Length: 348
Length: 215
Image 1 (cartoon, chains in turn blue, brown):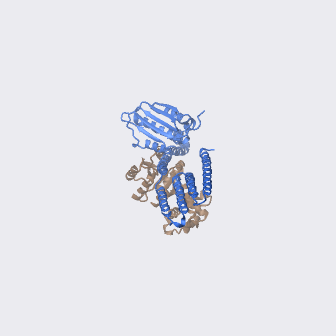
Image 2 (image 1 turned 180 degrees about the vertical axis):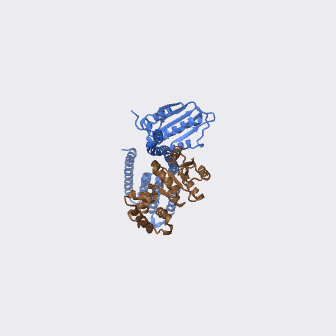
Image 3 (image 1 turned 90 degrees about the vertical axis):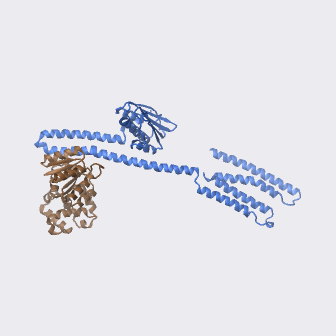
């Protein structure tokens, strides 16, 4: 049994006890009234007094059971009903026939207050609603960013294939076509053509591998984030030290985004920073993957200049990730990226 | 015969140049972008321009645009457009600049060197040659078309081969019928498409054009 249900049971017991005590007192008053000669029926007022706390408790309780965000209003409504009932009871007990129907005025007042509350409740968003609206705005923006990134990626892949592998295969076909013709006429140039065709085929394969690496590097699937970054570091002109403390496997989409983010950062290090050395530090704490890329280069990098890091930022935003850059003139440059995610079980 | 080549990828530019030269077609200039193409055409006045669809600066369809512009400056200037993929839309735009001396081929076709060189000569001589892929695409498209619906299946096959730039003899060979039968089919096509007799020389091109441009 959960805590709410337990509280509910306890409350019911207390209420039942209260009700029994009240009924007891009420009966006692009735007996005293009868013994005292049964004149003006005053115990009714005592009963009213006993009923008020019980009714208020039930009313508040009902209000609290309403769906989240509507509880205050529901409690207010229930209490208003109880107060109206009390006023009516007083009017009846005071001898309904002898007085005008005065409770109409206080009940009207209570109703106006209740309607006012309801209107305010309806018109003004709650803190929760504001938070949700902000969240929707963020999601809308990051989703658009993600789609932009994706479209740019697809365009890049298409162009790489068109200018790379596809063009080389066309050239191979051309050469082989010409070779076919030369077979009898000019055996010497035939040899050259065939050699060129073979070279083009190999280069086309290289191009295809490059494109595939750009889509999803096989080493990332094989070795995870740390291994893939180590593999990447080996191919770079600048020495890179990689350290990692991640007690498990990062989810594939985050892994891919983090990998390409590091690729971009390290490419910047090689191309722009003039650094002699770079550090990549991977960590995971309190449900957040942190990736830090640091170099001892010239600094002066910015998130706005060039689309590289901005693209990274948009890619990370999809996962609610953030990127911060400190790069004073003269260096060092530190890019810190954080992405909330859950790790799967540690690698064995 | 003199040709100008416009192709931004050096590998393919060299390949094309080599093939044409091996077949005694003089390559007067081989350039890599539309601006250089316009200058080369102006300077060389070649018999044909062989143009890649995709060129700098935006790598979309600059080549196509440049080809159409070249034909606007010098009407009837033979242009053979090459591409790594073919689009019916591009074929239509190209044909709107006139159907004579126009070719549009997938680059893959260049590997059939003999056919390719023949195509270059045909387009330079004012013929219309479209890639079989474009023709096939248009064929399915035109199944819904009324004028085309009047053609028999055999006549449509003949039509498709005409659009690929084949001669009567070649069509006869491909369909395994006599040249006389092909003649009969073609006359029947001209009749059904209401092509006038007085334009005898152009009727072939006109038929192809009508075939390709009707919606």
